[in-house]
Image (tube, rainbow, N blue to C red; front, side, top):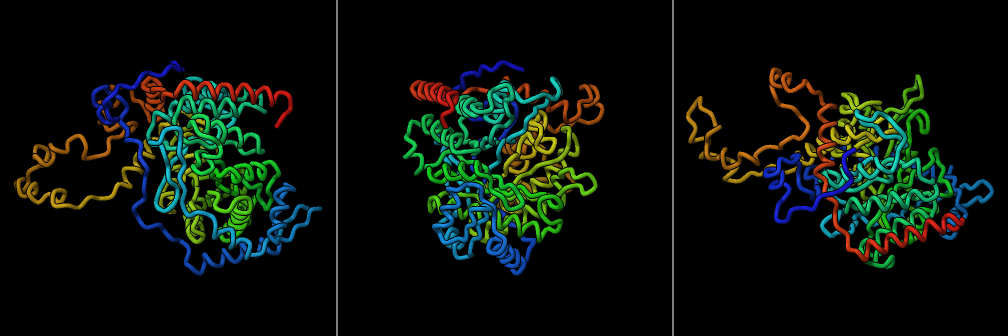
Length: 516
């Protein structure tokens, strides 16, 4: 792997200026992306209401198994029917409606630098790094267990590429580190090698609190101050069908009580964890999501929360999960309608089931990516680097994904219609049958008129062959290595660095002695 050392950023150069003067990988500037187009609706208003009513019936008649006594007590105090022997909680619609009334329609996450602030809600859109795989892969070193060195390089790449707005929860698990404290090392890498907001692990309260405290230290503020200005988020994955385990519930309580954002996301595969029909799957997903959203508001009214969706299907012949399918695409768009029905920010994912960074990986991801955009997702999670159904984080796939994300961001730039862009004088100035290559209107926009790809190859066949006949994956291998060479580590104030180091050392000692 290329050196971990970052270079000092040259002052006074924009990303476009630096790319032009230093022959850097072309990329767009970091910005808050907005989706200016109307959301797609594939369900009628009546169909949305039918799914909503079916979800409430699931909550009222069947209930959800909630394995946390503390969380069950919150529901009991709110008037829900709680069976402590089975752990089942049945929730009346009035409780759900009261919770939805306090859940914010938008919120902002602030990183350790103010310029990387992200708002979620309305027509905003942010893309995250892949999260959670136990393995990593590149075409140089092959497939291997996750490790800290690869983890750090993924964070460098996420920081380098402006199309990645937020870090996922453990882009790859560093398997060589102790499972009970490796989250401290990954949080440290997030804060050291990047200045993005990031997702914390919420398997239990302790890991969530560590992420909250470490982000606060990096910002030079207290945990209490960060409760009013959240900086981290997490994914709460429901154990579908209809089960919240204790560790996840405790992590959710810790996040909500400290004012940090939560994406309640049922992970539902049609035919395995839900009915095979989309209407049934969406009903179950919706019931589970509403249950989690309600819990966040019972903990702290106004706590920031996403409506999370991750409904796809399995191959009924083998049981293998499938992603980027027509069913997954429709589920993502329909889930956006449900999220808007409740006035909640929406999280979805553009994922794939391919084992390698190939055409399948690209077309399945692109299918799901379009559904995130058409469904007006505010957070597209796992947007860069996901491979093998989430079992592998891929360096080449990350590059392919960044190219697709940049295409999408450029597509979302509204068309400008002004006297200048209507270009009547330019049309008048070119004779019939002529060309616009040398026209002043063209030359003035020579470098900025069109999106400039970083991965696509537009050579003719002969030139491409002379250049080594490199396919997409081969070019991606070159690009992630170039990006690591271009990477520049963001600065951190020495006192904040010292505070983080002291906190990590203290927590590792406490965890080693069995303290939470």
